[in-house]
Image (cartoon, rainbow, N blue to C red; front, side, top):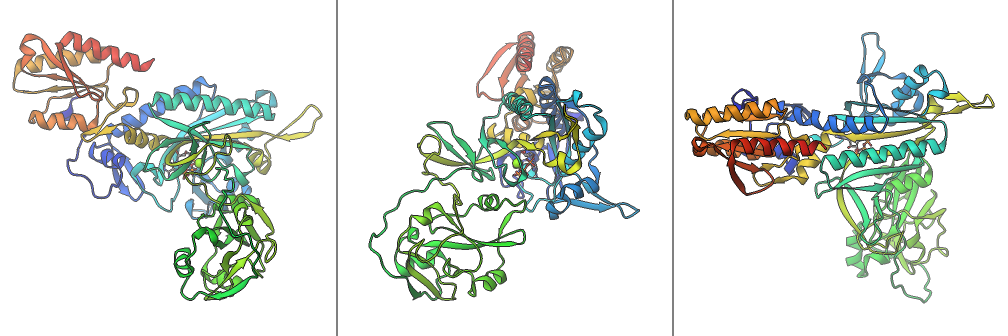
Length: 569
Ligand code: ATP
Ligand code: MG
C-alpha cells in the first residue's frame, strides 16, 4: 500500500478527549475516530489490526475444536424475558421495537441465543459435547463509556459457549478454552495474569478472568508474589487482621457527635483511630434491605453482600430516604443496635471491643459497644474489600493489589440457561437432563488497547508483528531521486511477492514528517531508502529498537521476510 493513497490522517497534537495512552495513540495513529460517546469508527489501519487480532483468536479457537458461526446483533426479546435478563440488564441494554411493536434488543451477550440454537438444531445428545463461537458486535449502554475502545458501547467480542452432558465434560471444555486463551494472549504479546473471579449468584461453579496489569485498568487484582494466588477484588478472600483493643468491660453509652457524619469527621472528633469504629451501611439488594458492618478502616465489598444473600440483583447502597426510614436518622448515623433489618457483620467486626457505632439518631453515636452483648448480627461473613498488606488466603504471604484490564473471561455457567430455556436431553433412563454450559468471552477491541498500553514509547505505538496492520514500512527519503524510487519499488515488489504486508511512504513530505508518522503508527520494521541507494544500501530498523543497521537492499528484504515468517510460527 502506498501511503499517498492510504486514508491515514495522523494527528500531531494530543487529543484533549483522551485520558490514557492507548486512546491517545489510537486517535493520533488514525486507527479510530469517535462518532458518539463509546461509539467508534475504524479507519483502515485500525480495521487491519482488528482483523489480525480476530484471526489470531479464530485460529486458536479452531485449534481447540470450537466451531465458528455468526448470530445477529438484532435479537428478539423473548429468550431474554424467559431467563429474566430482559429486566436484569436494565438500562445497559439497548432496546427497540419493530414496526409491529415487537420488542428487540441489540445483543449485549448471546447466552440465550446460543442455548436456543443448540436446542433447535442439535438432534441428539450424541452430537455433544460441542463448543460454538462467534466474533461479533455487542452493544451495551455502559454507565461510563471511556478510555476509547477499552470501554465502549459498541464493541467486538469473541464469545464462545460450550455444551456438555456431564460436569467432567464441562471441566474439559473449560480447560480447553483456558489453554486456547493462554495461546491467544501469548501470541498477542500481552503480559497477563489469570485471576479467580466471582461466579456468584449466576449459578456458576467457577470463573476466571484474564487480566493485563495496568494502571489504567478499571479492575483491581489481588495477588500473592509467594504462591501465585490471584483473584479479582470482588472475589479475593479476606482473613481478619488483628488490631489491639482494650480488654476491660465498659457499658455502652450514647454520645453526642454533632456534624460527624463520616469516619474522618468522627476520628478527629473522638480522637481515636478508624479501626475503633464500625461502619454500618444500609444496602438494597433487589427488594430487600440489609445493614452491613465493616471496621471503620475497611470498605464493604458489595459483591460479597450480594452473594451472601444469594441474589441475582446487585447490592447497592440504599437511597438517603430509605436510610432515614430504616434508621430514623440522617445518613451517617446508622448502627446495629436496635435496627429492625438484618445486620450482616464482617469477621473483623466480631473481634472488636469497645467500638463506636452510629446510634440510629441524628447527631449521636454509641461508644463502648460490644458485639454479642449489645447487638447480634444475623450473619457473620467475609464482607470487606481486599487491600494491599492483607494475608494471602492460600499461603499466608503478603497480598498486593494492582489495577488490571479484563481482556477475557471464562465461566462455568452450569444449567442456568439450559434450564430456563428447556435445553435438555434424555439420559440412559429416559429422563430429561439439562445441558451443562460454559461461556467464554474476549474483548477484541479492548485487546488492541491493552496491547498498545503495554507496547508504546514517547513516539508512538510499537506493534507486535503478529497484529501489526502492516509488517514493513519503506520510507523513501527523497522521492525526487529516481534511484531511490526505483530501489524502493524493487523492495516493495519483493516483499509483496513474499506475502509481506508492506506500506510504502512515497509522499513528497520532508523525511522528518515521514519518520514521525512511521514511529507513530508503529510498523515493526522500517526500511529507509536514502542517499546510499546508489550503492545498493538501505537502512534497516526495528520499531522496538533504537539502533539501525545498514545493509544491501536484498539482505534487508530477506531479513524482513524472515522476521515476518518467524512471527507466524
Ligand atoms: P467489565 O467488567 O469490564 O464491564 P464484563 O464482565 O461486563 O466486563 P463480559 O460480559 O465478561 O464483560 O465480556 C467479555 C469480555 O468483553 C470482557 O472480558 C471484556 O474484555 C470485553 N468487554 C466487556 N465490556 C466491554 C466494553 N464495554 N467495551 C469493550 N470491551 C468490553
Ligand atoms: Mg466479566
